[in-house]
Amino acid sequence: MSDTKILKAALLLAAIPFVLMAQNTNSPYSRNGFGILENPALGNSKGMGGASIGIRENNMINPANPASYSAIDTMTMLWDFGVSGNYSRFKEASVHQGNPNGGLDYVAMKIPLKRWWGVAIGLTPFSKVGYAYSHSYTLTNKYTYTDSYSGTGGLNTLFLGTAVALGKSFGIGVNYKYIFGTITQSSVASSSDDESFNSRATSENWYMHGSTLELGLQYAATLDKKNKLVLGATFSEKMPLNTNVYTLTMSTDTTDTSVASDFGLPRTIGLGVSWIYDNRLTLALDYQHQNWADVKFHGAKDSLSNSSRISFGAEYLPAMFTSHYYQAIKYRFGGYYSDSYIKNFEYYSDLTSANKIGNIRNVGLTFGIGLPLRGQRSEMNLSFEAGKLLLPSASMIHENYYKLSLGITFNETWFFKRKL
Image (cartoon, rainbow, N blue to C red; front, side):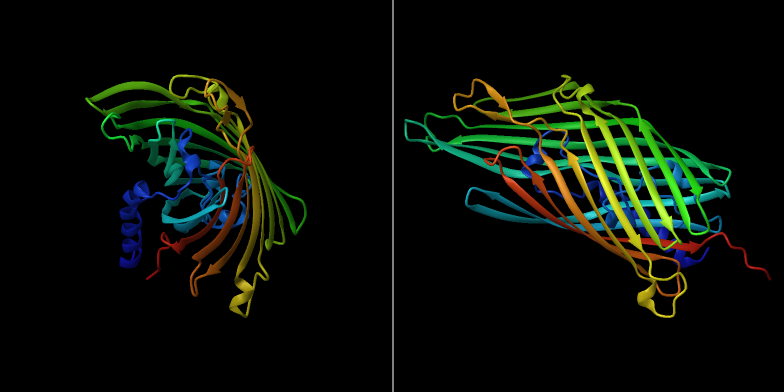
């Protein structure tokens, strides 16, 4: 193994702690639940709307379906890491605000053990929390009261997966997922009447961790010399999260408590299909359903809502054998639509009752390119994502977001033995 390869491995491993500190959202809606959920797509799948359950390629790492790890090149090892930056645009009535953010997204690697057996390990974000906003109002005593809210953190997924190929058509795999993280929620109540009103500040820290197994299947059918169809499916059972909630309250007196609380993550089912023509055109479609209504959140069931996501994508390679660099560039396009797992309510003015108005929905489009690195089998993946929240009420804060992602996949010969 060359010094260059050792250096690349060391840099990627050293980057892992920074993934845990990455925050990549400024949405006020990340206050709800576990925050904004992330799609586990890496590299080229980001430019294809995140569709990847039915994608089976030996030159990519695909944690969305562990069965894909059995598609390997026995002479190479894959390393993949990605960074991203996003810009969110908010509108409430006539007020506009924009917030940038960014950080390291993920790190992963895939190792061939046999021609029919592969292993993958990596770290990806599960959810992200990042918000800060306030609300002011004036009562009949003419004093102004302000409630301020802020939050940071999120959950991360450390996965270790393996898969075997059963003949040329079937792949079966499993991911062991360890999900962990810290979420901090803070609130401050203050008033312009400092003499008679006691300000109050509360901070909650949720320390969470848990593990689950995710099963994956893939079937690749060769229809003729140029056409191939891949079917994929994934399943993971609901899981409890071991959680300690530490609360600090500061008012006229300061109190702190630490209690265990019941939280959970849902049963998840995913289905995917891809069609490959002449190894140059790929079309992919995914469907995923998560049963959030059956898990506990702060000890209560039915406080979250079942959610689903549909993703689609396409990738086009102009030519397999090229004389010009631009002919080796891969072009990608995709989109997605999802329902939020958060239940939303609109409160009446007397604050004594609430009217359910429905869930937030999310829609977006993605574009991407894959740039081969000259003289190597490695690839640089660029993707752009534009999306918006579809709100059940016009009185809610409108949010549009734009995200630029950069991923680099090192695909080099690690196990080739030179002959003397």
